[in-house]
Length: 240
Length: 391
Image (cartoon, rainbow over the protein chains, first blue to last red):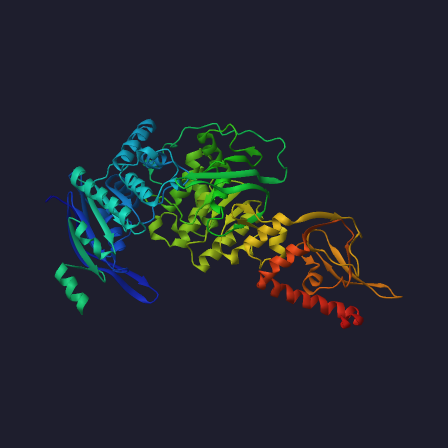
């Protein structure tokens, strides 16, 4: 539990807009350990999605460094070229979003196998088998040959999580993954994340605006106006 | 696309030949014949589509509207082959897409013949916009391997996104994501684009950009079928098909009486009698009692006043999707003019007087709109024949 897997060192991100510079993240220092299920909680506009985009290298940072250690090898994410980053991300990180973005014309098992085929980790026949295994893991195997429109939103999100696991990444990042689900379905998704962290040693970083979810993470921190707060700090700032 | 993802087509080639239908309408790209769709659940069986007959011709831009639960999405699912009908036939591009066709054949056929756009864009989050657009070409193995990125970039240029080609979807706006999804739908140059609420999640400006691109496609000869609830979009399509409770409303009725409630339009659709009048044939004679409300499906009619000892005056000419007979039915009395077919045959839909009056009693908005038209026509009559002032 004490092996650092994601480290953010003095990370800042400033967007330049017509109205002037807008600091979205201010000097963030954060270490996430192997097997943690970390929640980053904050209001809309606090910088949560920007933080995830810094961790998975989707967006460029303005200052600082992000180091991700996967397979014992530390990588300074923002020193990679775009092509290197895409390859590195494909192997190291799975992403889950609020909208599930399954391809509607492909069956569930094809949706997952497609991602494996694109990364060429398995032979096509193997990829179907592996995809079925993942559907079993998220308890949705019986629907494997259905199209996404024939299953519920919660089930679609579980398929999206299975897809994020397609290339067996060490880390999952999730941006409001329960945002469009009802509370019971959201619970199932939480249980699945907890299980993936506890039983499979995945490191999961999830951002949410829902303060009520804090207790569900193994650890959580709060983002306020682009700054990372310890609990007490966040509390004080909220009272000002 | 990074080199590791570009070396293999992810699927093996499948035969995509479907059965050609010999009696398919030559102009139609989509034909639904008696399509029924029933669903069963714990509460029992219910019928979502109740025998839909529909033809959509090549090059048409068609919108489909209807209340929630009217069967719009089910209808689209019949055309795309996502779901299958309980009864009836679906013929797309002269092929029966259900009879004797396996799921995988249909999937391959769909990849080459249909572009599909949804409300939520379904771009793969881990692929750049360019890679997302290339995906369908890889999937159905169309275009030379080296041509695919070139074509994908051209498609992104067409929707104005070439600058963002190498960005991941999360870094562009929702409007731009939808434009990329449209570029992807056109990847294999399909003749037909199907869109389910394509602007449902967009602001007005982005929605306008989407429709402008659709209009370009139509100019290039593509056919577009779009489900929408946005009236500002339906006014920009060639045809507007309304579904009510699993049945199609006659388009002449919905165009002639747009203010009518859908359930009343459907009632008229079922009651309407069709009749064709030959050129110059009298439809209503002056001073006859009027027993029907008329809507013009095809052709033109002339409303004529016959003055004593002088020549007749053509007061007005009415064309497709206009109506007549309402003055007498709403105000009572006999016909104040002759109505006859123009120089070509005229096809009309006729609603019996009592049914028309009953529905009008329940539809004050339509009566009010019709009242304005009646007023305008009476003015025309007065100008043509001052004697009618007495009426």
